[in-house]
Amino acid sequence: MAVAASVAMCAAMAACGTSVSVTPQGQPDGPVLSIGIPVDEPYMGWYADGSFSGFDVDVARYVAQVLGYGSSQITFHAVTPANAAAKLQDGTVALVVGDQTVPAGDDQDDAQDPQVSVSQAYLRVPDAFLVVENGDHTLTRPDQLQGQSVCVVTGTADRALVQETVSDVHVSEQPSYPQCVSALLTGVVQAVAGSEPVIRGLAAQTGDQYTSVMDATFGSQGYGVAVAGDKAKMLSLVDDAIGQMIASGEWTRAMERLQTDEPGLNGGKSVKAPTVHKADAKQ
Image (cartoon, rainbow, N blue to C red):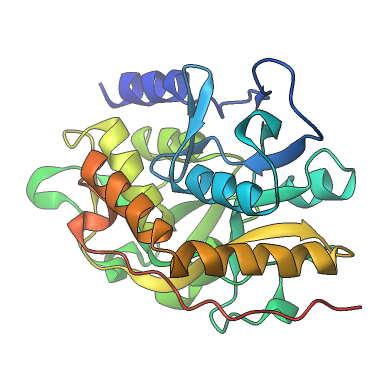
């Protein structure tokens, strides 16, 4: 039954080896802004029935609007943490929203890839573990993963966070969350690690008869908007747009809409907007 659930989940998720892009309907009135979005992260970046949804998408649309682009001028492209930098460098996308972790101190100089510049965080959340539901034998504490295997998605910051939290743990990587979940449900790994909203979304997708989320969260990571490393002016404009989204109340409204539609997000806990500081554009 667990194997069947993993196959069904992979079929439902667009990220199982699929390249996805959504172009504007009709003739765009002016230039088009290409934005990279994850497609396999429930609640955050999700693709189904021909459209993108999730909090990352709400942020992307708001930032694009502040930059002067209408809804018909936005093209979304599927990206993964592993290929986001390459797609920014080759011009496939101008921005990547989500999957670009901001360091804990919001220090943009600590970005993971020197070819990529990342905005200050528009969301900061802890990580969590997804485990197999096994009644009284379900793993409930991170220390129970000592000597076990944990799956993370290639290109994320989750490997380091897991290794900082659990000693003597083997961390394996897969290209996507559905593949990590498949490894979990088939017994290849004993847990999947990721940001808490994504992990809770994966649990909702698989069903509580198959998986469970550990109550204990760990670490912290920030979601940011990435641009190519030489686009300092664009980075400053994006930082300003995120600040406007928070100051205007639209960030809170978008999060409240999401939590109303998806009450399992973040375990029902309220999510607060991070403080965003205006960044001076580098000349």
